[in-house]
Each structure stands twice: as C-alpha cells, then as structure tokens.
Length: 114
Length: 114
View (cartoon, each protein chain N blue to C red):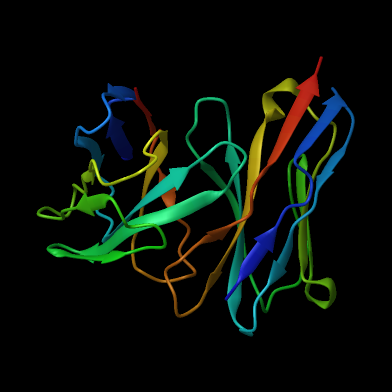
C-alpha cells in the first residue's frame, strides 16, 4: 500500500536533547513538507523540499533542521534551540511543488518534551 | 499574504442534524486553490476536496457539499444528516498557483452526538 509513514507515533524527550522524527513515503512524490500543529491552531510550515538534496525554510524553521538524501525520506530534527518543541508534527508530500496539488499527510508524531 | 479564517471553533450537533462549517479567505491573487481536510482523532489529515478559483460550481459528494462564493470570499462546507463518524477537526486551506504553501485556517472541531 502506498502512503506516508511517520515514526514514532509518540516521542518523549528531556529538555535540551535533540530528537529526530522520521518521515518516509512510497508514493514517488517529489515534494515533501513538515508541519507543526499546536492545540486550537492550524498547521504551520516548518520546512519543505522539492528535490533530493534541496530544502527550504518555511514559516517557523528556527530550532529545526532537515535533510533530503533520498526521495523517499525527509527526517526532521528538533534541536535544543527550539524553545517550545512540544507539539504534533505532520509530514506531507505531493507530486510537485505547485499550489494545485493536494498534499497527502502522514499519521503524525506527537512530541512531548519533559 | 493570504489568510484563511474559520470563525467557528467548535460545533456540537446531534446525529442526523446538518452542520455547516464556514471558511473565509483573503488573497490578492486571481488564481488560487481552496481545500478542505478532515482530521479524525487518529491525527492524520484526510483530503476532502480541492476547488480552483475559476470554478464556482458547488459540489456534492454523498453527504458532503461545498458552496464556493467568490463575491464573499467564502468556501463553506456542509455535512448533511451528520453521523458520529463525522466527528473530527475540519480545516480549510488555500494555496496560490505559483506557490507551494498551504495556508490553513485554525480548524473547526465538529462533535456529533448519538
């Protein structure tokens, strides 16, 4: 079955530690995205990538880093510089970096920093 | 910059009632795309519909219908004869033809009681 997988579903980390969230897709999509969702708010874009070895900052990139070494994978690292990392993180993808293409989403990772 | 407003934070209805979710958008562009997504308790966003700015025809898909009115910059969503399985957070989003970015509203939580 084609789709987007994110792991783990729940993640707990101590304050000051870096943590990496996994996102894998087997849809052969070119573009991939990371969003952050806080309670009562819509999704905010962290980073996006349209091709391998290239990525761009979104609206709230500070304190996060990404890599795109493979088309299928777009991991997100939440660094200790992120002041308020506790949130729900969603990965998405679509065929091209164009406004008309709907994005497909993974199941999300809920990160809690203790 | 574009903006999407979902003024209704929460809506609670009894099963079989109809429910309408409001979405108002702002953009200076003449070509844009509007989306609705459903987020069930599991967390994954599910794509429901895309509408481009040149197509003002209303659409019906089963119990779901959408009313797009450019004159009022609105793209409202109606669930007819609601069911418990419709309980979710619903997001309206907008993107431009020359841009990748999805701008999300804050979402409306719909609770359908049996």
